[in-house]
Each structure stands twice: as C-alpha cells, then as structure tokens.
Image 1 (cartoon, rainbow, N blue to C red):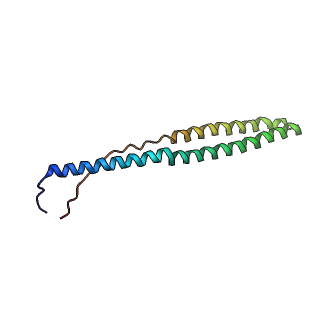
Image 2: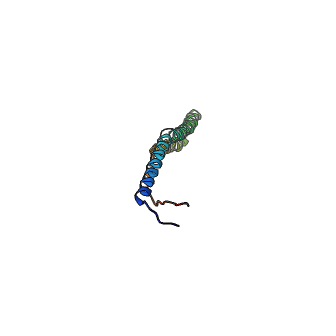
Image 3: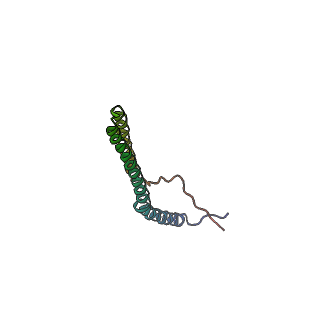
Length: 117
C-alpha cells in the first residue's frame, strides 16, 4: 500500500463519519425509547395488572364463600394469599417502571479507517 499523503484529510473524513453515525444512532435511540420500549412496558404493565385483578377477585370471592359457609379458620390464610398478590403486583409494577427508563449510552471501544486501493 502506498503512503497516506494527507492524514489531516483522512482524520476529517473519519470525524465526519463518526458524527454522522452518532446522530443516526441518537435518532434511532429516541424512537426506540419513546415508542418501542414504552409500548413493551405498557403491555407488561397491563398484563401484570390484569392478572393481579383476576387473582384478587378469586381470593375475595373465596373469602366471602368461607364466611358464608362458616369456615372462618380458612380466611386468614386466604387473606395472606391476597396480601401476597398485592405485594407481588407492587414489586412487578416497580420493576416495569424502572425498565421504562433505559440507558442507551454508548462507549466507543474502537475505531478504524480502511484504505482501499
């Protein structure tokens, strides 16, 4: 391969390419953060809430059934299950909320220029 005659020009072209790629990445990242990730987290949130609502209804119905049948000794255990559903719901919703805010910071590991003759 021959000598590189104008290293300043090569570095300028490299910087231009790097800036272009950085801007393109930032545009794509904004779209992902605003749309893709939010939609995914919204679906997870609805699914988690719907499941918890169904489970809560089942347990509340079971408690009422135990009361009407006079099986009062079963109520505390079922209330414990209901409390567990509520705690798990709270934990899952917090975890989903944290995933809504992802970091797409990049760290440049390497860069290079390929010369083709």
